Image 1 (tube, helix red, strand yellow):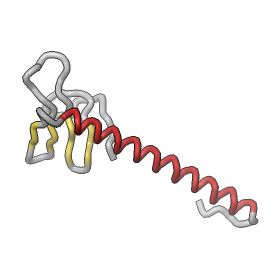
Image 2 (cartoon, rainbow, N blue to C red; image 1 turned 135 degrees about the vertical axis):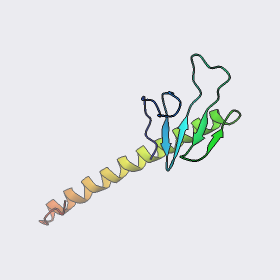
Image 3 (cartoon, rainbow, N blue to C red; image 1 turned 45 degrees about the vertical axis):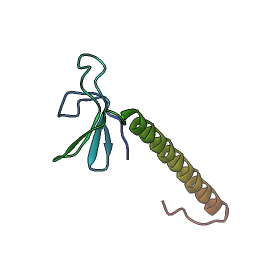
Image 4 (cartoon, rainbow, N blue to C red; image 1 turned 60 degrees about the vertical axis):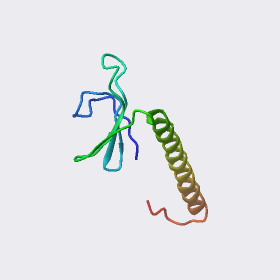
Length: 94
């Protein structure tokens, strides 16, 4: 859902862009352009996140942790169901 990219986002040459649905979050550059701020953009719109970029980054990190936790728990449940099915003589449906 929120893959981090170390490649350029294709629009401004920034690194560390993250996809959020159809939107792309691009953090502020840390090197040369002090006056540039983070943005959230899609194909048609761009939102400057000058005042809220740190809050949005925290939100993305929290959502990423939630997604990772959900994926881990889902895998654990799937392994448990497979193990229980095998012990009961059932065939795995994987």
